[in-house]
Image (cartoon, rainbow, N blue to C red):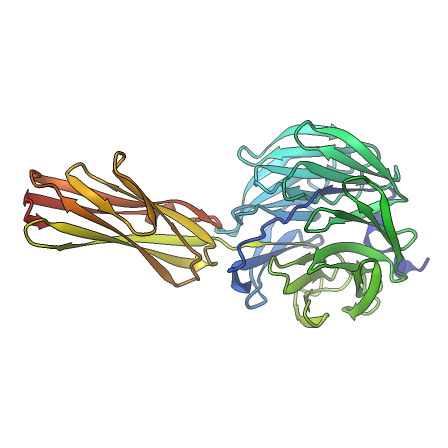
Length: 457
């Protein structure tokens, strides 16, 4: 085999790739657009992570991390990014809103690759120094479990939509392990030659594994482990990603192969004779981002035409490696206003305006009105009213960056109500992706009533 064919994963003698069956990491609602994503790319030579705005394909931040960063994964809400620092025996935790590392997690050995569970509560790290899978609790950012495996070296993690299983490819053991994430136990093993990189189809039905020694991609049924096909790729396959019903594979000869049901239907030239690294698709399936490992830059592919759209430049001495794509945070700001109206029976309409201050769009949100005793006859079209609890809960979204949505609550001042303080508050109780700014999550208007017809707010 040629030197170019040896590729990235030739750097290890025996490897393990971890796939958490059916990940779909940050697959947002269909209303999300390219402006809602960030691509995160590890630079294993410069010890940093590039943040790329997929709307402009510009690097918006460069974040220093530990030594020799490799794997990268984003929580589904886009609020945290986990980076395996292979040379520092740690995992760096990045807050995208601050563009900074906010925590480091000690992972003795050599953490390789990482995936985050669909609920965002766990991060799974393959470790080629200890031959195990380390499980991180993302709430406390601590390792809470280790699962011992055989011959773990190069590891790649991928999850299923339900998060029930993780697949770990042990290169030296010629095995892909299927692990129950609930019990932390190995439930089955798939024998296949020297598996390294892994990927799972969006429907979790198919698992694909790279054999970089024999230059093949082998597919399996995830339910049974039965082999369903083998595809030879003379360009020396490296890493892979599913999107739009196709499997995209980076190669050591600088190309990306497009496979449909195991057949090569297109070959995309990216960086002639230069080894490519990781590959990840935007959740809308429109683009793929490829790390140019033995070159520089991050290449963007169009899935509509299977051609290169552009290349995002990185420094000449950089080494873009793994790629992960996630939602950008959306800062929702609330403003409550009141409009008294009526004559003998005084009604007040409270309008809650929810504004997305960016940087990304909000796919969904929930706001809740709460009002003081003294108001009666609540009416909030499209919302759920609980008169006993004196609340009205409203769903809003999607909301584009810079756009606003309004929800209204109409209340009547009781006939016997006399009060100098009748507050009404609206609060954001949930939203996706994450809201990085709690300071503008609520707004209050206070009314006073001398009588039911003398009301001011």
